[in-house]
Length: 116
Image (tube, rainbow, N blue to C red):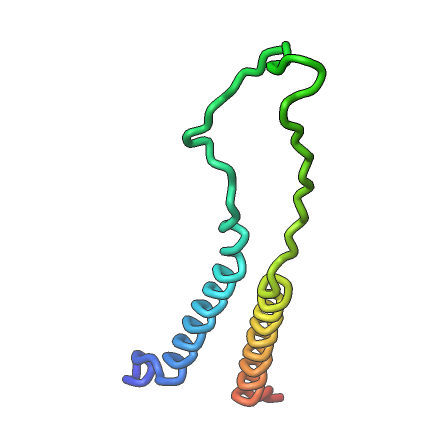
């Protein structure tokens, strides 16, 4: 067994580092894109109180002392970051990964030749 067969070459070490960097990059993108989904506000039950309402009206007479109007809550539009930046980051990540895969396959094709 020769010395070069036992030692990993610099090229294989570089490819291993490139793979690790790519995997770390993709993982950070996935976490970054998915994290807003887990950051939504939810009502908490801490300090929640229950009230009981009597069947009889509390006021005397025909009408209540104060009439409250029903206020309609407007639907809040999503911020521009959610609508534009996150899909853009996802598309760019796919393009980068695809470009890396194509480049890797091209380098493999140049390295080996079919004999026959």
